[in-house]
Length: 184
Image 1 (cartoon, rainbow, N blue to C red):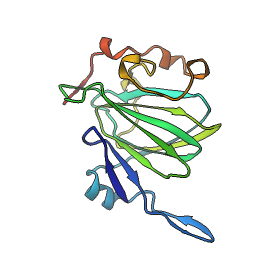
Image 2 (image 1 turned 135 degrees about the vertical axis):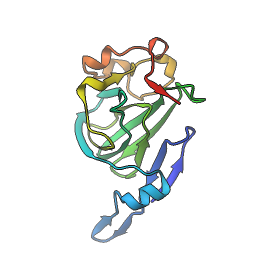
Image 3 (image 1 turned 90 degrees about the vertical axis):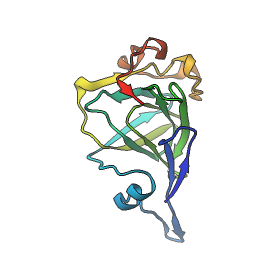
Image 4 (image 1 turned 120 degrees about the horizontal axis):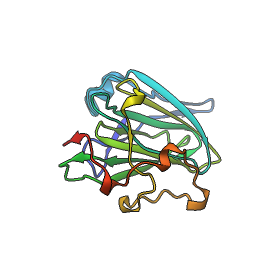
């Protein structure tokens, strides 16, 4: 796997080595040993999958400590714009984001460490999204910042009138009104 560094330390894009021939393709989607050597030591404990249609925007979510989660995400069908926002108090990149298009064709994965809010927008007719978490989900630890916060400067590539959000995701605070539980 090749690791692509981003503008925020610790947030990386991963490109697998794909072997193609007349039968199709093969790639190793995850290796604990290689991930630990090239990205960071982490033990994933839960895999999740969601299916969404065009215009669905999910996020920007995180789990509060002590249940914080690092995530390794990928899109196995369709295309999404995936985003990580630094919400670590005192971080030199606080409030900044990294966005990457993940598709069934580019096979890219995106690693989001603890201390980041995460979200995505579905760019294709349908998308199937998978992610690994390094901590179990705890509903009482749910947190979020507004996915529509203009101050974040995220181009979600979805016209506002076509955006589909859950009721929960419309109620998250703007970054300026947010008291982060994470320290840099």
